[in-house]
Each structure stands twice: as C-alpha cells, then as structure tokens.
Length: 325
Image 1 (cartoon, rainbow, N blue to C red):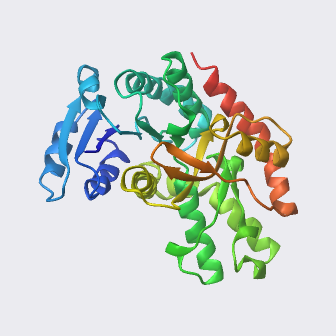
Image 2: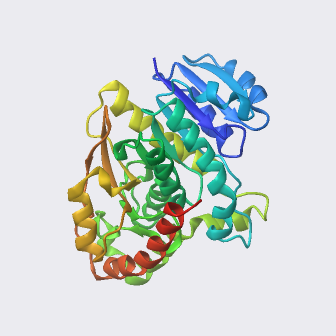
Image 3: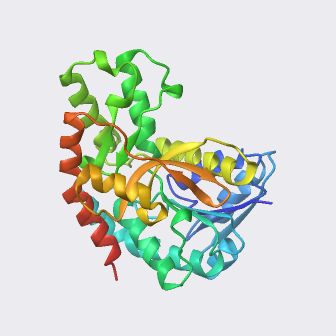
C-alpha cells in the first residue's frame, strides 16, 4: 500500500504530473490537494483504469486528510514564473505556500519522502528542511529538490548535437536549479569530446536557461509545465521503484541537504572550496530514501569556472531559504 499526495494538483504542473503518477503500478492511493478544483481533477483521473484510488481535497481544512498516512508528498504548488519575474520575486510568493505544506507534511506524514518541485528550488528546499527541523522530524535522506528537468533538457539538447539517443543519454547536472547554478558536466558524457568549445558553451547556456526559452515561447501564458510534469514524474517513480519495489542501482541527480552524506559534503567542498549546505548530486535510492550520494567526479577547466560562478548565487539562495520567516 503506497499513498502519494500531490500538493498543488490542480495547477499547470500538478494536473499532468498527477496523470502520469496515476499510471504507476506501485501507487494504491493518489491524494490530490489544492486550494481550488481538486474534486474535479480527482473525478476525472478516477475514471482511468489503473491501480490507484484517487481522492480530491480542496482547501486548508482538507489538507490534513490529504497528507495523513502519505508515503510520498510531491509539492508542485505555487505560482509559475512569468516574463520579467526573477527567481527572487518568485520566492516571495512561493515560500509561504511551500512552508505551509511542509509544516503539514511534518505533522501528518513525518516519515514521507518529500519531493519539492516548487521554484526556486535552491531556496524552497531549505524552507522545507527548516520546517521539518522545527517539528523535530527532520531526516536529510528523505527530502529532495527535484532538478530532473535539467537532466531531461541536457539529455535532449546534447543528444541533438552528438547524434545519441536522448532517452538513454545520461548527462549529470549538479549544483542547483536556476541559471548559473545549473552545472551540466558534459566532460563526463561519451561523445562530447568532438564538440567545439563554442558548442559546449552554447549548449551549457541553453541547459541553464531553458526555462526562459519556454516562458518566451508561451508569450506570457505560462512556464515549463508539461516538461516539468514529465521530469517530476520520472523522479518520483524512479525513487519509488527503489524505495518500495526493491529496484537496485537507480540514480537521479537531486538537490539535497549535504547532511545526508558527509563524504558528499567533503567532495563538494573539495570542488568549490566552500562549505555549502545544499547541492544537487547524483543520488542512489533505497528503502530509507538516500542510499548513497555520489561525488561530483572529474571536471575540466570550463566546468571548474562554472562551479566558481555557481557558488555565490547558490549560497545566497540557500541562506534566503534557511532564514525565511
């Protein structure tokens, strides 16, 4: 019996994400929470002939029922980024929403795996961690910032350049989940050695600012919702296969508190020269969440410059989340 609660299930990410999760053979109860429209979304999904029961929960009075007993809580709630909106503007709106959901999760499902999609992830994950600490139920191996869209984009964009199959091309992306904090490690990908430095620079920037590409293309009508839903579902379903179905060697990059693995914290300090509290790294999953955190690995001179550029912005974003009141 596996219960998954999607908080923000009626939104632009939440609806397609819930649809993708409804297809899982592992989920027995899919609980959908939002402040509007969730009964309708739940009714729609409940007609699909897959394993999970679907329930809809609308408004703060139904949040406890939605979350209680959940094994996984997925948080795509909040407002999307609009043209001209900075990640700082986004944080001011979304931090309060995420904190409220995190407090509820800490109270009613303290052992759940928490998957944070709401942006800016570099700050909202620390907000969630602080909420769990205040409730006395913090476990760094169970809270994840979902950065999978960066990996999905990297696989797509790089495969177009080297003629590889996108679905099977693994491009590690470490660091954070916005702009220059996104660090694609292309030197670790077979076949990229034949790319010119100009191509490497261009595709790196495209991976880092792929979200802007979508905001512009949608002409102010939205941000990356469908691709984010796909990436979020991939992360959640892969993590669940390891946690609940005994799958081995499932690894995804995810933004975590480095308390989860002292060796990983040391590898980040060795690479950046800083004691960063959070970083996105490749993580292998198990029944307790994080089973092993893998180091950054070898980097070339270009990637070392990216790391140097990443640290100040990532540090500021982390502090903003930790200090949020």
